[in-house]
Image 1: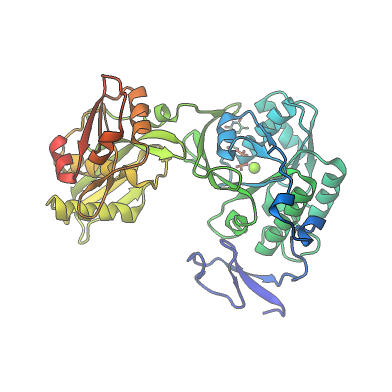
Image 2: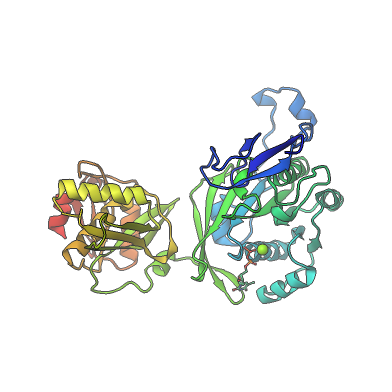
Length: 451
Ligand code: TYD
Ligand code: MG
């Protein structure tokens, strides 16, 4: 081992003086890579005069919070109303998911409103960017482009040009001359982000940073810098499907867990304003094991289909597989069904799938998972105009969920006629159209009778 070197987990940035097989921080395997020890002095701290003398709250002047609208409605909502001047935003996602495309479209809209924008690419040549831009449409001249990976150069350019918004695509290609580690390594990525943070805070420039998510740990993942930036957005979605979900994971200037839905088309990303319709596209009719539920993503209700398949097992230990839903949660619900409803699931394989490539973690989908499992087990079709939501506890009780009315309204809008909801939510529901029937259930046995 070279003197003065340390090992970093390329996934979460955990530091260790010796190589480790499994990271104690994030529990990933084989993610440690040796790097030169970072110089302690080179910290990315914001040093301006007001920071060194303490002030009272009264002395702090509050300016009207300026937000620059990107005019991409889905993105503006995830950001909490637009781009805040001086903020550092991280856009993460798998390679090829559409990060560069989205940000180029942001540039297009900002340039349209005569904001000065600088797009810095370390991945593509100017010609490649032009080819992409031609697919997206017309651009105004307040957008300038730069191909550069040397952060010290970038710093000079930004200081001289003072644009309102800067885009760095991607952080893993950038390098700082003061750090000897290779581009994409933990120390390099951290140091570069530190430099960008100082730029953003001192000059009041909003900076978007693109970060690739990698499984192999060859380059440092965006998780390393999540805590340094103001806003973290992740681009998710099935690469084989055309739509993409932009999820706000952290936001110092807005609420988190908001999502934006986009569809990748031949001429860039298009906003999907009615995601429920999108998610239910292709839902089978008259099939057992298929249930529609309503999940609340941030402030927005989305209808999704949950599918379950319960079949006799041919293995010693029955198989359980989940897609899009927490595996342990499904196991827990299977145990509840076995104990409280007397279903013999010990000899059955169970597969649960959330269609459309969505990933949900809200407990309000529990009841629908139970219903899908029961439907598949009994081979009994659930009426296709029914939606089901509610949280299920270990005693088999159905607990109330937040904003039941909003969820029912969304179902109503999508043409559903029956809602099976927690009994405790029934009182809070008012003013519904006569066409929709609301059934309250207090436990899973009651649910089985209603089905
Ligand atoms: P890109 O933005 O380059 O992904 P990232 O920056 O996250 O790596 O996305 C490129 C993908 O999107 C690529 O597979 C081509 C496709 N695409 C379209 O389908 N339509 C378009 O208009 C554009 C620009 C790209
Ligand atoms: Mg890209």
